[in-house]
Length: 380
Ligand code: PLP
Ligand code: COI
Image (cartoon, rainbow, N blue to C red; front, side):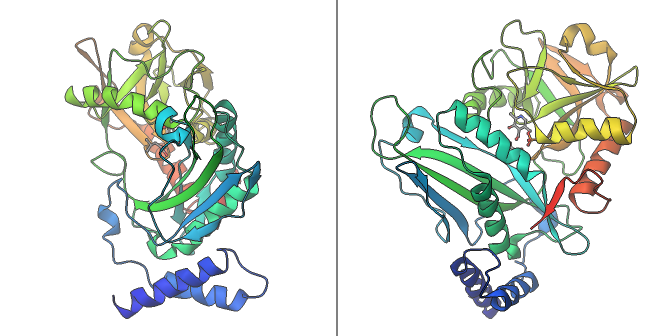
């Protein structure tokens, strides 16, 4: 281990000892540690990162026992030991969130709308009979992990970001189908590049597969781990057809657009309006809500959220895009359904101008390159 890694580990360790926050009695030590860590960025080829797990120095862990949340702490080990009867292992009592931290030109580290992730986790925990993670614990977990892993935060201009994964699992001795006796809330981070191969803003294809993601009154609108296990086969089938992801239609009639496996859908129609599919079984995406606001308030487009009958309306769609934290805004060139490829803007070979503008607006706000008039970013 080189001296810089040693200094970095000691600084991260000290910050962990101080609880990850700026302490009343240790402000100077805290800021010296942060300075050292910022100076000692990891030697990573930031611009060539994909969306893969990279182990960072510290993660946050808090336990819920007997109806009470512990304070939580930063810990070094990426491994988790859980009881073999834990409900998470058998009955998928698990949920998660995903958000990113980005470095602004002035060096600030910005989170994007973390309050919405916390609210969404609250809705999911209610649905899965899990204890609510209080906003103060959620934010402390996120901010302390980001600060403690400052050396892993991609620098401004690299195109990469720090992906933050908060999650909650039901643990403890159990056999019958009932909520867990204990819960663990964890947050880890990983520096990431683009979710889809091709990088930045590149065209993807989707395929409609004969499988559903969600049932009408099921878990579709919640960020439950179970939804994603159920989607693995659909993704594999879509990929075998030459698409990156599955595109789901509504589970009742298989007519109306729902969402992709890891992203919501936004459409620029040929009449100039923006439309996003309305459905009770899709995840309420933070990115989609932000993109629709940018489309109406900055680009001045007429926007609506309504059911979209895919085959009846496909010829009215000019630009088709998938959006999410990992996917950012990904223009969709082609969609395969029942042996036919439907092509969008520029015969499926070009990124549409509205998608490009929305991508620029969103990513500039997220990276602190454009004035955040909506108050969406929060410096850590
Ligand atoms: N839909 C699904 C199924 C997702 O997993 C995600 C990712 O979080 C999204 C949509 C996009 O949501 P957000 O923009 O909040 O990341
Ligand atoms: C995200 O975009 O944050 C997600 O959770 C999607 C996941 C499948 C990577």
